[in-house]
Image (cartoon, rainbow, N blue to C red; front, side, top):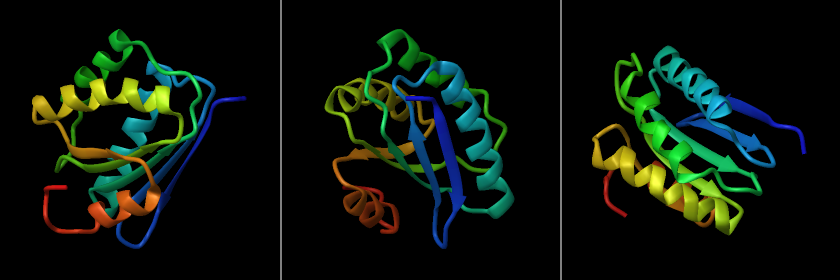
Length: 128
């Protein structure tokens, strides 16, 4: 499977779809930069992500996301609702998301279905 991604501006959120056997930190950084720029351009900080990766990143690579988000030059931090369709990738992503939230870099949750993610993302309450 070749690595590819799409980013779409939808009515109330930015949609990100990743197709990759195993996402890399370089791919993640590229996507994060484009999503951040898109959020600022459209003044929309709700992000729905859907990953179809089949192999998880290592914890050391997941930890690098903290530095990428910390260095972002953005008007506002995003609210991220993410769905990983592979269970092993979802487990790995929990670690990265925990680091980002612990350091106040994002507000976000991981969900099992896109419907659950959209419901949370478009709800004004920050809790799940």
